[in-house]
Length: 409
Image 1: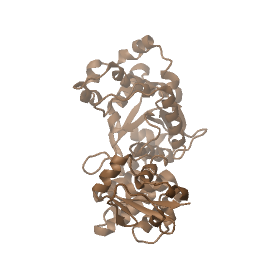
Image 2 (image 1 turned 90 degrees about the vertical axis):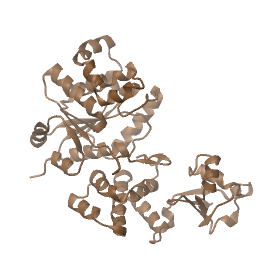
Image 3 (image 1 turned 180 degrees about the vertical axis):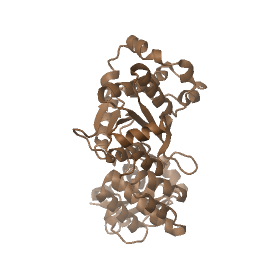
């Protein structure tokens, strides 16, 4: 008999808290459960922090349960105060619609949608047309302000100030669960551990207003062994959209995780069987690099496809002396005519998004962090000519791990 998906999630280290563990285990054992996970479209791409939730949805769907991917086209207009020390930036409808479309495209890469499969829903469909007085009368009466103020998502904000706008967020997310319960017979809400208070609000609202049973599960956030959130680099977040974080840079991020984080990442971000995860995580010294290579390849394959994962792997072998093809290294084409126009190196670096400004380039060069064709760059004002391109190629190394080649065409 196949293992209950709850036990799979527990074994792989996903589960943080559950509202009714024994009931949830029986429910997942005995029926195909419709569940939902919500994603507020605060940016034009999902990032690796969201990928934990996507992995859970994939595990649940593989086990025969039905995912509802809820996009918060309505809640994003309020902003979730959970895990925040300040108020979120307000987005306009145009920005929100752009972000919603991007999220939709991303979900279809991981979850199977269609009849009797997963469904994509947007809470803007029911939240934006609510009558406020009716909402407060029918929904607000089920919420105790005293109890809400003890929730972690609010407690951390009270010292700096919590707006009434954000105070409504818990009611709106709870109402989402009630709507999905009524529309789709959705019995479970899944989310990150920072959503615990909001999920409890929804479970309680369903029980109070319908007498029905609803359940919640939260999952650990993606953190390092030191408790810091993963998915941040000097360049910012590690995004799932290849236009924002290239497959090569994505691969490199996982290839360079700290040794103590390898087991957690293999467990949470791949489908590698747990006995193999344990074996790989037990490798020591230089051998642990083999586990990191497998991690980087598997996560990149899941997010960007096998072809991009192979390219990133090839590029890494090329750069670190294990063979491979230089065609896999991230590159930017340069028109030959531009070399007659006093083309500065820093201009190309900005165009390739290796630096954000000339002042950043100056600091990088002053700190000895930039090399051109394996020679450290010391002159900030360097003007490029054809001699800088060997066989029409110039290799740039930024810091210890970022490589980029410029190719004359």
